[in-house]
Image (cartoon, rainbow, N blue to C red; front, side, top):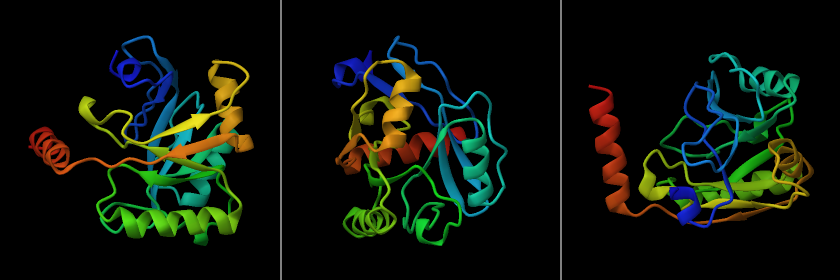
Length: 186
């Protein structure tokens, strides 16, 4: 419901180290997970089962590819979150998130992410990194696909038929996310 209200046809729910494959409102949902690699976070989309946390980023990307999924480097160069530096990878990911709505110092991190994606000639995506309903779709990716089937959408990402759309989370939403995270970890 929330994703439809925001004008989104689909979403990828990528919870930390937990494979999510369905949304509650019937929206097209790409199976996804945000894996805590030894080098930082790596997103896997189109997976049938979770990837073990704690592997190197290169091993994590290889595991994602082994399942036929796409590997995305989220919030690279972020100073406040566990982030992979895409310039140091030996295994090529499928895309780099160049706009993350929850990046605190986004003018710096977005610029570095864009430069990394351009240097590697990788597709560029955007994400809300939401964690709360109020920020779903703040930043998003337009994916050109011949069908609404998850496999076709994943293929669109892999082929670079994507357009990232930036957006940022405002301070009240950041505080709400922090309070919810604090409450959940008590």
